[in-house]
Length: 334
Image 1 (tube, one colour):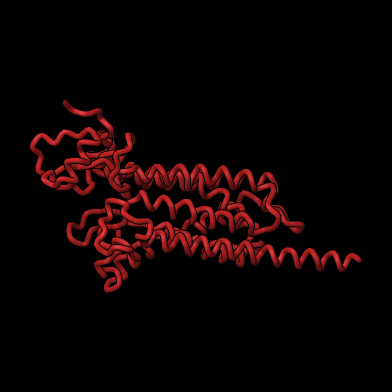
Image 2 (cartoon, rainbow, N blue to C red; image 1 turned 180 degrees about the vertical axis):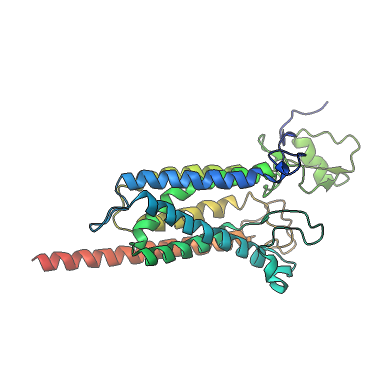
């Protein structure tokens, strides 16, 4: 007798294209639309923060034009950084190192089919966006950490849509699992049904093999985990702190540290890239589709550790500088 169904089939009506099968319109993809939603949401949050006076200085109040140009500059640099990082760090073929002009080439080199800029890296986007913010603030003579704080409050809510886009693309899924909300993603790796561990796993998930040679097992919907915790949860925390920050740069440090911590732990549920595997591993032969040891560390976790260290260091340095500034001000008043 078949066991109880303990998984969710990825909805067959979801396609990466918004209008699949329709010429020209099939070029419109959910992932690209999610980027538009993300940037629009960040812009809306920034406008709210501007109205609350978070971006004003004694010399001048911030305007909507300031908000728009600041965000636009950040977006351009974010996309550049995300694309460069994805192709040069995560791609193991070496193609982009040999032919760097292909990094921003939106067509498949073999089929000539339009693919857009498939492949973006969050950490590359973080570095690129940071460079864009620094450049904009220098050109417009704005206090960098004040503006960085405001954007770091706005980013997570917009980021939520990016991870939903990954889910709609059926990509960046997690490791195999028997939790009842595990999802069978159509493009995930299949396993031989002749293997004993596969048979036991399928049975515990309520999957009937029925003579199948290959079986697709349920996986953690890690894109949705990230959307919830790196997006909504982190936004809620930073939003609640925005009027209580002790000094400019505090929220930027909180965001960098908080994102690094949350993403580090979610990486234990997300499957690493097959061609990269673990960067640090207790067991070099460990499979990437299961979590056999907390000491098996992915590329994303290394980068998140650097974010955590950087965020804590930034907050500590700014706290010391702020205290010295206050002490100096107090002494001068005496």
